[in-house]
Image 1 (cartoon, rainbow, N blue to C red):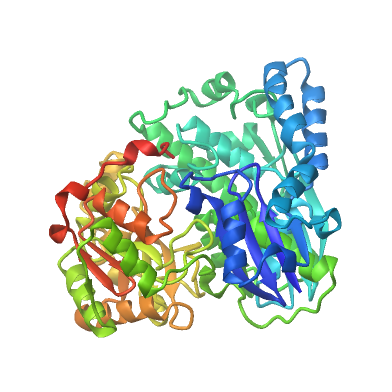
Image 2: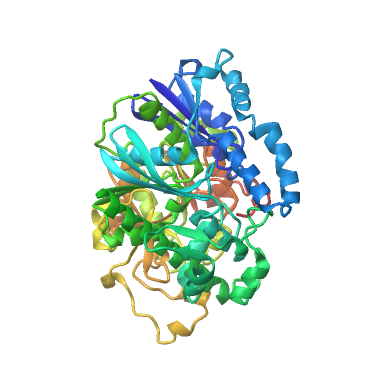
Amino acid sequence: MRILGISGFYHDSAAALVENEKIIAAAQEERFTRMKHDASFPLNAIESCLKAGNTDLSAVDFVVFYDKPFIKFERLLETYMDYAPRGFSSFRQAMPLWIKDKLFQKNNLLKHLKKLDPKFCASRLLFTEHHLAHAASAFYPSPFEEALVLTMDGVGEWTTTSAAIGNHNEIKIFKEIHFPHSLGLLYSAFTYYTGFKVNSGEYKLMGLAPYGVPKYESLILDNIIDLKEDGSFRLNMDYFDFCTELRMTNDEKFEALFGESRRESESPLRQFDMDLAASIQKVLEKAVIRLATHLQKVTGQQNLCLAGGVALNCVANGKLLQEGIFKDIYIQPAAGDAGGALGAAFYGYYQIKNNKRHANIDKMEGSYLGPQFDSEAITSSLTALGANFDVLTDDQLYDTVTNDLIEEQAIGWFQGRTEFGPRALGNRSIIADARSSKMQEKLNLKIKFRESFRPFAPAVLAEDASSWFDLKSASPYMLLVAGILKKHQTKLPKNYENLFGIEKLNIPRSSVPAITHVDFSARIQTVHKETNPRFHQLLSKFKEKTGCGILVNTSFNIRGEPIVLTPTDAFRCFMGTDMDVLVIGNCYLQKDNQNPLLKEDYKAQFHLD
């Protein structure tokens, strides 16, 4: 049986194809259209999945959409009625779009699907609730026969947080928290107030937190969120405007409480912003740990699955793992709305159609689920672009690239199938030597064109992870933060605590400074030979020559741009940045050997994230 899952029309549209329990393919629409968080119907992603499955839509048994639009419309309408007459201008803007497109989404979906299969009929189109799709995306690919499933995001239809039990092929939700009370929206409100973009800049807020002191934690808990001992919570809506206006916070209330105004986007960061980030991060961690602790006591479950946008907060995930509440934790790598497409497909396969489930492996297989390009396609693309390149054997490639890394060169590394989800995991990555004290600044300012405070993740040989990090679990999807072991840390100067937050960035803190955050932590990717043999081989060669099996791994793109998908995307990014070397398959390109006329400054084409 083939099931196609779709997410779309809000943000992060995607498609996923499941056949007889196996994920054939999954892809995000943004990678094809080059529009970050693209919300349009995921036509390109669907066609890519069907191509990977060597099939067409007529041979797909069912298509499952990740949302129930009528219930979402009910929530929107009831919210506006509850807050009337406030928010009329927002209501007036939203209604035409809903009436034109979203309210009659079934017809809209059928119209698009019929373009792919003129005989496609309504009986083959199914729907699942938003948080069930999230839960399914985490539980069904997990290796657990039974688990507690916790989903947390901004909002689905009504639900913002759900707890369920996954058992074999069935998921049963037993507890929900409803809009407007939402951990995701709470965190997004502080994202907005510190001058970052909502639904995009939350990871910046998380990355900024270690530069600050959580001095406002009690103020937030006393005034903005009523967090109970069991992890349930309610927001004080006097501080928020997202129900009625096109902004997240009531800025006047926030300013009166915290004593500082909202930071304007792209303006200099203040110590206040760093302290506010540290404070809301602590609140989020406390809420997640209380929720998980209470739910474990109630259910007795030993395994936990996480999904929803909040599950991308890898610092909170790391703290939860350290608590030792569960025997094992599985986090869906595409935890946001893109993963809802995969959850919808799995939910349709297992629960709607009641197919048997076999649980013993991680069905995500490293999350390398998107399109790939063979040698002929790569060489023909590069030739057409006018690129100068050499084709190396594997041994030559690993040896040459390792030497480049040792010489502190920044390398675009493009291999195999593209990753599904927001993290580059070694197939569409920019890599560098983690031992270099210059590399964080070089990558941020000259290649990624982004804020200097942004941290970089280490890709480490899975077998070496415990000798570098305080991590007792695999972290293949870069979704856990853990500390650098004391033996690798370096002593800080006496005046360190007196430095302004961002100034701490320039102080080396370990023998691998390029991936060590200011609090001696790192967002870790453990690289496994079974799921990514080529990246594992490169790391092994680097360790052979240096004694260190760690590389910097960041996504292959510039700020505001989706991760590159094609060889053409990769070459364009290579020529538009100060990247030194590009490797696509076995094709090896040096910047100095390229025609300078091919250089292109294309930053302005992308909206700042």
